[in-house]
Length: 183
Image (cartoon, helix red, strand yellow):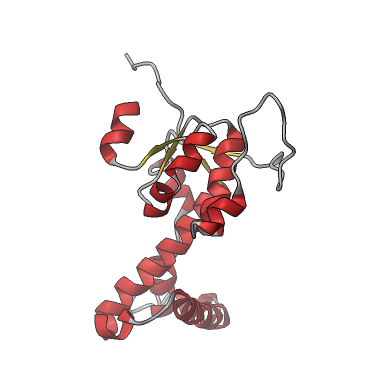
């Protein structure tokens, strides 16, 4: 009934953390644009948004449970902000992440010991030189550690590092068509 699986999609907790970062920023900007207008948010950096979210979290925590559920509106404004900026992990696990293995990183070593029988390891310094961010370097190193053949991302930084990925045996899939051709 089901076709044979050609690839096993794998992610890491680090990727989920990065997804939460994106989700919080996106939710904050969406809600903020509805309340104060897009102009206010256009020049806000990630750090400034983080400061607003920290302040909202502190206020939310200080409110106490009784204020999170206003009898007239159902929830407080701070509760609505919290819901708009936090990933519901149980929902994500059963829907958006269904079929994706979240691999453990227990034996991950930074920097790794080199082994003669393994493909060359990615050079974090070369990747940093190309202005690849630390979290993206970490994703590359984890993919190598997991023994992945493919690395799927729409992030342009990875296209800049395609040659390095090829050297360590990771084929970059950077378009929907490339991903679909493998699946």
